[in-house]
Image (cartoon, rainbow, N blue to C red; front, side, top):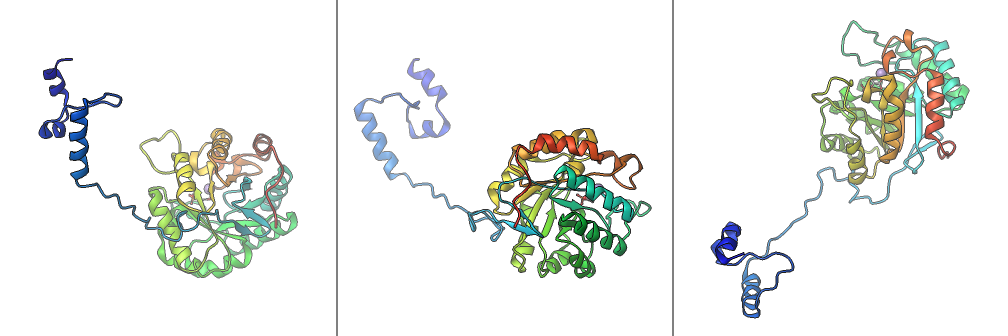
Length: 321
Ligand code: PEP
Ligand code: MN
């Protein structure tokens, strides 16, 4: 290449300095190399200042060891996949007891079930409230499974905490700061779902409300975010799960039911979640999904749940206290 052609290829900066551009491995004649080194030494050095993340207490920098959260007798964040399963909504005493028995037999570690339901439409089933909480606790006791259920408002925190081992903040409430502040003073651990339009930083800052307010027992849950895609109910952000695991010491679990909205996608999404390092799964299971009062189309029946568990679990149940 002649010197004119080289000059035309030079970067603007190199042209201003009147330098010949170099590529790695290209040796300059000795005199030029010396002049170049002298020029580089006198150039102002770029200063890189590493900014601390705004989620100070949640950041892995502040706490390099992973946090282990204790929900009843189950430990979340040990490296073992913790499976929480049960119906979207608790519909009757018999329904939650039967589901508890079936998911326990399949190897679930915890029982889920909604008593207070955040529904998009006020005309949809809103949950059975207080009496459903009692049935959930009873089903948990009968099977020995700790229970997780959603709390919708600060006034309900004490009541829900009396019945549940893990208090779920739903996606719609991730930025309900009054609720987060109240839960920061609760004596039970919190499962914080990611808001459908929340960035990972906003999610971790929501967790920061709980940690800075005094509750160190926080589990994060990715449940799908809203994107342009309508073929699935939400877009399950599994790269976000892997990233969250790097950014925070808190355990991160995945909800493949809300994350996909489709029964047939729950098993592959569960396996993918395990592969990216999720600490657990939250899966909707209903004894008869076709008759479910909420989210039947994304609920597994007990047999499908058994099949999923067989592919997920090369080794037995989660670490227990
Ligand atoms: C649920 O778990 O039933 C639920 C309502 O989830 P989300 O808050 O993720 O929509
Ligand atoms: Mn649901």
